Length: 135
Image (cartoon, rainbow, N blue to C red; front, side, top):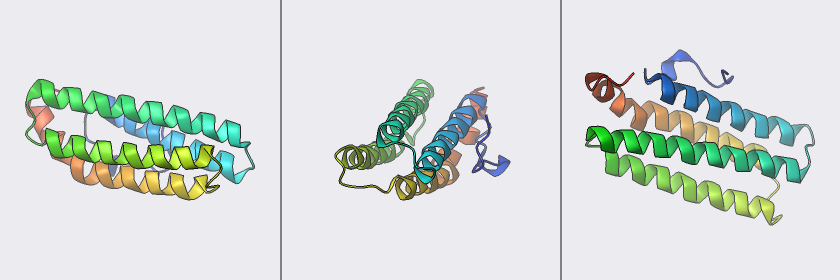
């Protein structure tokens, strides 16, 4: 599955992580489309839940690989993951409570955050993992 927001410039050259990044971008797009086409709040919330689960799984996968291979940038990387999860959980809570009805803007933020994160933070582990034989 390839997301419209994905192109090869975002590849970290680790197939598992590239696939997970593509899946997350596709899920963000799915939430945006549902919101734009009048999807019910319950359906949008379910999609958002699935996105959050996928994101937590991906972050956990990256962090475990970093720990297993002794990546020096683990702590700042994990800190950035935790900050996004807190913010995304807050957006999710506000949406569920009816305090915000802007899932398109929220998803745009998450999409931009993810692409920026890939280009800056994830790019730091690209060559490190390759040296360790992780592909």
